[in-house]
Amino acid sequence: MEKNLLNITSQIPTPFLVVEKNIVKKNIARIHDYASRHGFTVRPHIKTHKSLYMARMQLDAGAKGIACAKAGEAQIMAKLGDVDITIAYPAVGNVRAKSLAKLCLKHSLRVAVDSQYVMDQLAFAAADYNTVTGILVMFDAGLHRCGFAAPERIIQLAQYAKNVDTLRYDGIQMYLGHLYGDSARDVQSFEQINQMWVPVYDALCSAGLKPEIVSSGSTPSLENTHLIPHINEIRVGTAIYNDYFIQKFDHCTLEECAARVVATVVSDTTAGRVIIDAGSKALSAKQLLRFENLEMGYVVEYPDAVITRLHEEHGWIDVSSCSSPPKVGQRLSIIPVNVSLCVNLYDHFYLITSSGTLHKERIDARGCLV
Image 1 (cartoon, rainbow, N blue to C red):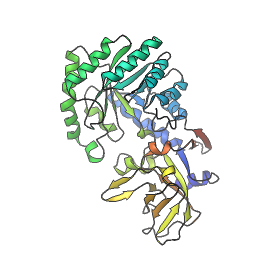
Image 2: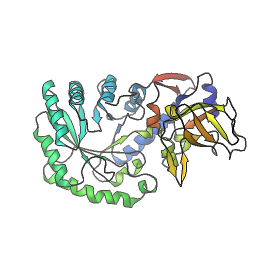
Image 3: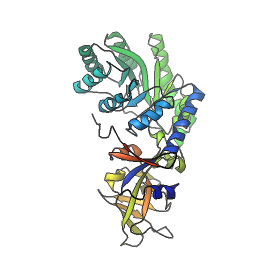
Image 4: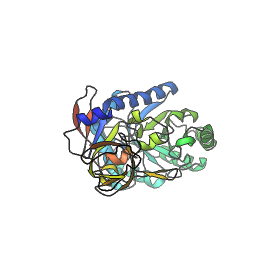
């Protein structure tokens, strides 16, 4: 595949981002196959691809709706038409609240929250537009980033959402981002979550607040989500493309990584090292540190090469273990460590279609940080 990829894209100046559609289709099918087996609906998180084209593919495959990180992403994705949207992030601030309330005029929309403060802003904005904003209360499954694990705090927020006219209590959102590698495959990891989650769910039901939606996200633990009871929706972001982090921890194969950054060797003056024209502005500076080995991407054509350092416009690759290292002018395809960060660096990506043709597609929600 890689040789064909480099041939097809040989006239495009490097560095650039290329995505293989056949792999994307297989990854989407894998997600839906798993969801079907366990009765889950699928809500893809567009933070990874930020693309209307890719979101349409996901919806056409049967996704219930989409998840966004920010209000700005939701405004872009609203161009999809009649799409159900979840903001999987506490949308703090009146500007965000007003933009989301306006979206509620034409879309079913909900926001994940863990404070009354955010709900009040959403409620006031919804009143101004005579709309209703859905609420997902955030349950902390163990990452300790947002949300609560204490039943009384979850109930308090859920009851508040239910009692406000311009809000709609829709359910619970959780994120399993602390599970990857062996922990994402260990049944005990999920039992630990269930020790916290089941009492929360039972308490909600006893209080007359049974959640209509219980949404869980995170790619590494995706295919063990069924080990947590009462979940009925999966939010998946990275899984559409996958990346070196996901592959390194054995949650996908190299063949399931759909996105590459293509770069060119621009210098080989030092023995055992080459410099490429893709630095932190092309690959992102995300590092993968495992077993004391620092890596900043995977060079597909040279498995023994290691990207050790990124400056803004330059990448340093240790090729000392390569029997026939790359030379100046040679192109390399690189799987980024974090594909979501990488995608957000580009205005466009190049799509290799199922027929082998090349299309230039816009990354529509690039830079939507608000």
